[in-house]
Image 1 (cartoon, rainbow, N blue to C red):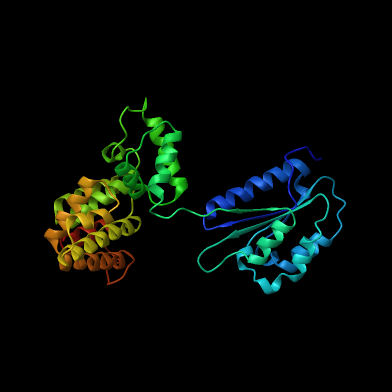
Image 2: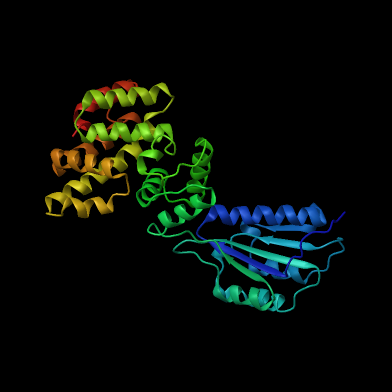
Length: 331
């Protein structure tokens, strides 16, 4: 049984490189269509069933189902312009009480065909692009979203937030919402980088960075304490290797830049982290030197291999492997 709802257009194309938002749009449309026409009014085209020919045939077919008919088509980023002739003809004559929605999860090599975009618009439909912002745009975007939540985020804090939680806009928004809830009342002054530490970074991620920073600084005992703290909260070596390697590679890039004659100010501008953390990383990287840091990265690769049973170490526990490797890992 159908119920009334928002008017749907004959066609939609939702595309972009923000795959999570494309999926959310798809889920919302499906739920809306089922509320209007029931599950029988929704037809899905996924995987091998998602071809221009099959969608064109479905648009041309008669249906006796009551209410509006909605066709949801996935995988459009795989289609090619030369395959679209029949579908374009069907879109030029939109069937009454029918909506077809195309979804394309795009990347650098796969995009929705341009002719399909034009056909959707010509049919009286909408094209919605869900693309992410560039890394340079994200701090400003974070400040604008923070303002909507009643928070004032300083420039350095906005850059630090992106460095802490990554470049996914959904994750940044969730952290801002958590930050707004954690603060009993919005502070009068704009938030700085130090206000974010401990509030936004996930505990495991923050401790993994502490482990990596201790390795860069050559502090074997500090690195062991950070590792044991992570193990106490249930973290495994396999999940930590990527975060530690990322920090070590950043430190190596810093050391190489400083050794090449770049100023500390130039290097600091490229580090998306709080100023004090950047200064500490630069000092430790300068002290360690690029050679030692490169050796640390190689030692980390050896540790990962050993943890997977390589090099005849299958009988040793992860903790034993780390304890043996720490002197080599510490730059």
